[in-house]
Length: 77
Image 1 (cartoon, rainbow, N blue to C red):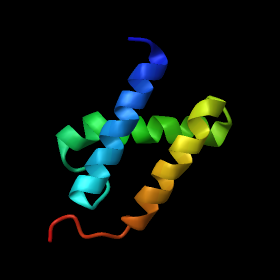
Image 2: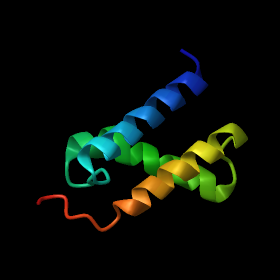
Image 3: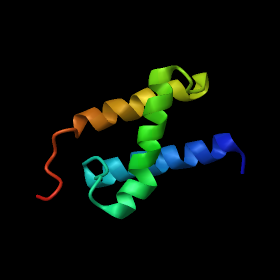
Image 4: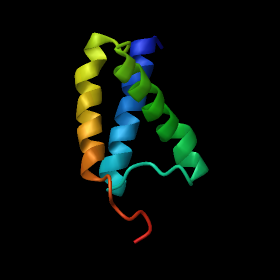
């Protein structure tokens, strides 16, 4: 599996998680932090520094917009 395929797989996992749970990954739940939150944080840093590959930028912007919808959701209700 090449790097682009792994990135797309993780992207789809994160997007499906957010759509299924109707919330963003929590930093307080170790499974979510390790699987999703760290990936999001790493790619956000690359995006901010301008180092994220051009073909990934559009998809990552869509993910950030989806995360913005659920930014203030109470995760425990």
